Length: 337
Image (tube, rainbow, N blue to C red; front, side):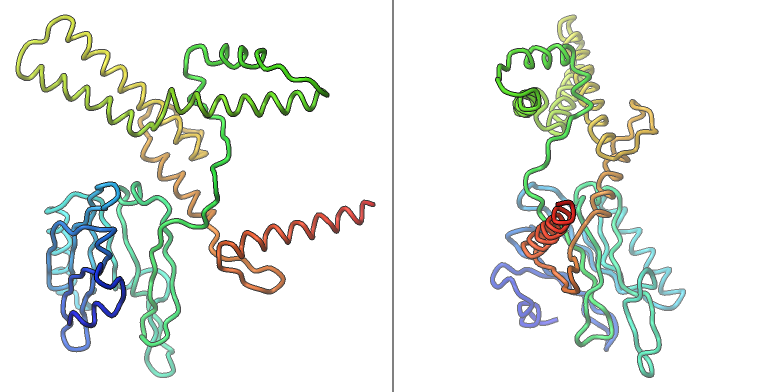
């Protein structure tokens, strides 16, 4: 693989890349990335795979990407699995693989008149990778030249603007929460009809809750991590010497504080996951997280067809949906009139 070919793919001077050369017309792997987004920390080459260990520039998260060109003979496949096992033994970070192998939707066709179809290409990821990249979607792209269909792995969908207000069940676990809401309600003075007073009070309560939530809860993940650091701190101190009574009390308080944030985080993700049949306290936060992310992926909308016209751009989709409902509501209003 020449540098000229790699740089022709884009990103200009910000492009970096690693490659595993092809054997004749078979095999060959190219992994390239934008250095403004990813920093490479290490890489490993095998006979059938190329693995890069990256760090995200924005948040410092470390993860692994492996490009695989799957062999066809049984013996070579056993070698491939040994190489994959070696990579997993070397790095335990979140992991994604770009795979050319027999799985999933048809991604290759060939033979006389393109009558042979096979499932060869797709991405494989582990659960820890999905926990970090929660809004990814895999799709097959058109193939203008190759006999393989390109496979895209995208993060995120349509930006939906500000998140709607949602009452958090974890708020009910705060002592005095209901009394606080009752006090706020009676402190708000508004005149007008009953429906106007109700709507205005609810709107003000919502704004108060947003501020209160930010002050009391903040970022659940960060708070849990900070609480765990306190627990680890007292564990380190205790391993070096005997704790005083006051320090022992502080250590116990740190454990209680950590348990509180773990429970609150689980309650939050349990609500988002819509899976209410599991009992709280079973430490299923990771499961709830993945269910909530799966719901987001299932609700993903990248295109829509209105009156026979396909819309793919974000603003087109927004305007198209709004116009369609406006027409529908106008027709209903006309019929009612």
